[in-house]
Image (cartoon, rainbow, N blue to C red; front, side, top):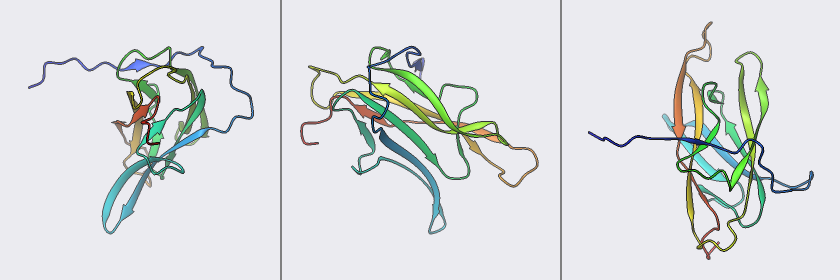
Length: 159
Protein backbone atom coordinates (compact mmCIF):
# COMPACT_ATOMS: atom_id res chain seq x y z
CA UNK A 1 0.00 0.00 0.00
CA UNK A 2 1.36 3.38 -1.01
CA UNK A 3 1.38 6.17 1.53
CA UNK A 4 2.54 8.89 -0.86
CA UNK A 5 0.25 11.80 -1.52
CA UNK A 6 -0.18 12.52 -5.21
CA UNK A 7 -0.37 16.22 -6.02
CA UNK A 8 -1.10 17.88 -9.34
CA UNK A 9 -0.02 21.47 -9.93
CA UNK A 10 -1.86 23.85 -12.24
CA UNK A 11 -0.15 25.92 -14.91
CA UNK A 12 0.40 29.64 -14.31
CA UNK A 13 -2.77 31.36 -15.64
CA UNK A 14 -1.22 34.75 -16.51
CA UNK A 15 1.93 33.27 -18.04
CA UNK A 16 3.50 34.64 -21.23
CA UNK A 17 6.86 34.15 -22.91
CA UNK A 18 6.16 36.89 -25.48
CA UNK A 19 5.44 34.72 -28.51
CA UNK A 20 4.32 36.26 -31.80
CA UNK A 21 0.65 35.79 -32.75
CA UNK A 22 1.57 33.72 -35.80
CA UNK A 23 3.88 31.23 -34.01
CA UNK A 24 3.46 27.62 -35.17
CA UNK A 25 2.60 25.40 -32.20
CA UNK A 26 4.25 22.15 -31.22
CA UNK A 27 1.40 19.66 -31.75
CA UNK A 28 1.00 16.66 -29.43
CA UNK A 29 -1.82 14.24 -30.29
CA UNK A 30 -3.53 11.77 -28.01
CA UNK A 31 -5.38 9.14 -30.02
CA UNK A 32 -7.93 6.53 -28.90
CA UNK A 33 -8.73 3.99 -31.60
CA UNK A 34 -9.62 0.38 -32.26
CA UNK A 35 -6.98 -1.80 -33.93
CA UNK A 36 -7.32 -5.52 -34.60
CA UNK A 37 -10.04 -5.89 -31.98
CA UNK A 38 -8.15 -3.98 -29.28
CA UNK A 39 -8.54 -0.46 -27.92
CA UNK A 40 -5.30 1.48 -28.37
CA UNK A 41 -4.38 4.75 -26.64
CA UNK A 42 -1.25 6.35 -28.06
CA UNK A 43 0.32 9.78 -28.01
CA UNK A 44 3.11 11.50 -29.89
CA UNK A 45 4.57 14.84 -30.86
CA UNK A 46 3.58 15.30 -34.49
CA UNK A 47 6.52 15.08 -36.90
CA UNK A 48 8.93 13.50 -34.42
CA UNK A 49 7.47 10.14 -33.43
CA UNK A 50 8.40 10.93 -29.81
CA UNK A 51 6.01 10.00 -27.02
CA UNK A 52 7.12 13.16 -25.20
CA UNK A 53 7.14 16.89 -25.97
CA UNK A 54 10.46 18.55 -26.79
CA UNK A 55 11.00 22.21 -25.88
CA UNK A 56 14.06 23.64 -27.67
CA UNK A 57 12.95 27.31 -27.53
CA UNK A 58 10.10 29.35 -26.06
CA UNK A 59 7.08 27.63 -27.58
CA UNK A 60 3.35 27.27 -27.91
CA UNK A 61 2.21 23.69 -27.24
CA UNK A 62 -1.09 22.35 -28.58
CA UNK A 63 -2.59 19.13 -27.24
CA UNK A 64 -5.23 17.55 -29.51
CA UNK A 65 -7.52 14.71 -28.47
CA UNK A 66 -8.41 12.42 -31.38
CA UNK A 67 -11.36 10.03 -31.12
CA UNK A 68 -15.08 10.30 -30.47
CA UNK A 69 -14.73 9.35 -26.80
CA UNK A 70 -11.87 11.58 -25.60
CA UNK A 71 -12.50 15.03 -24.11
CA UNK A 72 -10.63 17.23 -21.66
CA UNK A 73 -11.74 16.91 -18.06
CA UNK A 74 -14.64 19.05 -16.95
CA UNK A 75 -13.67 18.76 -13.27
CA UNK A 76 -9.88 19.28 -13.47
CA UNK A 77 -7.53 21.51 -15.45
CA UNK A 78 -6.75 19.88 -18.81
CA UNK A 79 -3.00 20.06 -18.14
CA UNK A 80 -1.28 19.79 -14.77
CA UNK A 81 2.29 19.05 -13.69
CA UNK A 82 3.69 16.65 -11.10
CA UNK A 83 5.85 19.31 -9.45
CA UNK A 84 5.61 23.11 -9.23
CA UNK A 85 6.64 24.26 -12.74
CA UNK A 86 4.66 27.50 -13.05
CA UNK A 87 7.82 29.39 -14.08
CA UNK A 88 8.07 27.17 -17.20
CA UNK A 89 4.46 26.53 -18.31
CA UNK A 90 1.21 28.48 -18.37
CA UNK A 91 -1.39 30.47 -20.22
CA UNK A 92 -3.65 27.44 -20.72
CA UNK A 93 -6.45 28.07 -23.25
CA UNK A 94 -9.23 25.76 -24.46
CA UNK A 95 -10.56 25.27 -28.01
CA UNK A 96 -12.72 22.91 -30.15
CA UNK A 97 -15.76 23.04 -27.87
CA UNK A 98 -18.47 20.38 -28.25
CA UNK A 99 -21.66 22.13 -27.13
CA UNK A 100 -23.70 18.90 -26.97
CA UNK A 101 -21.29 17.29 -24.49
CA UNK A 102 -20.03 20.52 -22.85
CA UNK A 103 -16.39 19.44 -23.28
CA UNK A 104 -13.25 20.54 -25.18
CA UNK A 105 -10.96 18.62 -27.57
CA UNK A 106 -7.94 20.97 -27.89
CA UNK A 107 -5.86 23.05 -25.47
CA UNK A 108 -2.80 25.25 -25.84
CA UNK A 109 -0.23 26.50 -23.37
CA UNK A 110 3.05 28.38 -23.52
CA UNK A 111 6.39 26.84 -22.54
CA UNK A 112 9.53 28.68 -21.46
CA UNK A 113 12.77 27.10 -22.70
CA UNK A 114 14.90 25.82 -19.82
CA UNK A 115 17.95 27.92 -20.74
CA UNK A 116 21.02 26.42 -19.09
CA UNK A 117 19.17 23.29 -17.97
CA UNK A 118 20.69 19.82 -18.36
CA UNK A 119 19.93 18.16 -21.70
CA UNK A 120 17.02 15.76 -21.35
CA UNK A 121 15.58 17.41 -18.24
CA UNK A 122 12.25 15.65 -17.78
CA UNK A 123 9.17 17.54 -16.57
CA UNK A 124 6.31 15.17 -15.83
CA UNK A 125 2.83 16.42 -16.69
CA UNK A 126 -0.71 15.10 -16.82
CA UNK A 127 -3.34 15.31 -19.51
CA UNK A 128 -6.62 15.07 -17.61
CA UNK A 129 -9.41 13.65 -19.74
CA UNK A 130 -12.95 12.40 -19.55
CA UNK A 131 -13.64 9.16 -21.42
CA UNK A 132 -17.17 8.97 -22.82
CA UNK A 133 -18.48 5.49 -22.03
CA UNK A 134 -21.77 5.44 -23.92
CA UNK A 135 -21.47 7.64 -27.02
CA UNK A 136 -24.88 6.53 -28.35
CA UNK A 137 -26.70 6.75 -25.00
CA UNK A 138 -29.25 9.38 -24.03
CA UNK A 139 -27.25 10.47 -20.99
CA UNK A 140 -23.44 10.55 -21.23
CA UNK A 141 -21.46 8.52 -18.70
CA UNK A 142 -17.91 9.75 -18.06
CA UNK A 143 -14.80 8.16 -16.58
CA UNK A 144 -11.99 10.52 -15.56
CA UNK A 145 -8.45 9.52 -16.50
CA UNK A 146 -5.00 11.08 -16.36
CA UNK A 147 -2.51 10.38 -19.14
CA UNK A 148 1.11 10.64 -18.10
CA UNK A 149 3.58 11.80 -20.81
CA UNK A 150 6.68 13.94 -20.25
CA UNK A 151 8.10 17.23 -21.47
CA UNK A 152 11.84 17.23 -22.20
CA UNK A 153 13.00 20.80 -21.61
CA UNK A 154 15.67 21.05 -22.93
CA UNK A 155 15.44 17.90 -25.04
CA UNK A 156 18.16 15.24 -25.10
CA UNK A 157 21.22 16.29 -27.13
CA UNK A 158 20.41 13.61 -29.77
CA UNK A 159 17.15 15.36 -30.80
